[in-house]
Image (tube, rainbow, N blue to C red; front, side, top):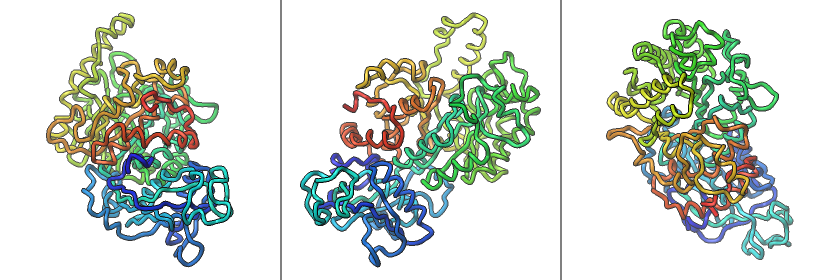
Length: 562
């Protein structure tokens, strides 16, 4: 049965359950109370965008008035209660009983309609997104209660009204579902290429469709600083940025109002935003804006923040970002502080961790932060350097001017220390968020051709050249239970893909790299079973049309999916 339904990620339990049904046009979504109206509206908007099918929301008992096509009902999903508990850390810090209480749900589709039961609104939304994936154009000559209306059987275009019935159907199924991992995220680099709020919202739409629940925004780096910070106006002045990292003619950073809008849009789709302020390395933009913040770097390209001179700056920034962030986590970066001596690096990271904790947040940092000796059980170390992530210093020296060779040595020394990072974090009791570059860095070039020759020609330019190309099928060939490079005894916080934008020139390139690979990450993070490639490939077949309708027109037409 699971091979025949286009559900990604695959639910933990799904089975055929008799005949399906044909919804009305407009499709009617019922929610139990006025405070859930907005939830119903978000679901209706998703269905409309995926299928071109108008949808309306009704509040109250669906039996009291017109029958609803999709009923969202608060209650106990009894069959889902038997699922294994979700692993990892809750991005909401255990709110409302944690992910099992919030996200578990049951979805039934019968000739009478579709019904989602969950104990919390988040579970209702997860079930509703599954229902949205089940809808498909009705087959000609379909029979059953949904075809009772005159003229209903296969005579109108998909999405058109047929005397009250739509040209869609949903198969009869019963789903009992919940997350395998509590933390399922995507890290989005908005520095090396800026994405306006509307484009970030498109990313959130995609995350919601595939039951991700974290958007990690990489807001600052050496190329630019993308978030307004009161009292530090030069940070967002493009005069201090690397040219060519913008997007269009409008503003190239987020105001506080912009950031709040992103957070609100994400929250309505049950996605938690985790902002990252990358320090003390990756800070050339900040140091260009405020030179007094910089440490005594051996070369301008090895710029980093001085732990003493930048102490007030770091406190101001972290306090502002914490105030803008309702979620419990805040990312301090900590990676690739090339050339920064161990003592000032450790001092800076320890202070940043302490500030975040004092602000009532839990710190997240890239794996190199373990070198500070300051990580603890309440923090999160994000592991990214895979065992096969080699820094080829000799190859790089051969193709750059000799004057830059000392920089290569500094970078090589940092990568040589990487195998000790996660063991140090685990020894400190720090949970590890898996973002292995082997399978979860989605800026890796494609190995397989596209069905479109022009895309095949582009794949050498879009995707980071330091990563060996891998096919979409190869990128699916891993499982959270065996992430490369995680030491024995690791407390897995969850799974987070990352998309870095050194080779991304705009939204089209973002679509090129994210799709079709991102849904495979969702499958691994949601379903604890090792689902086979062929079944996943079959279930994904209907999805590219939905990506187009959500505005992701430039997705890679991978030959692996043909």
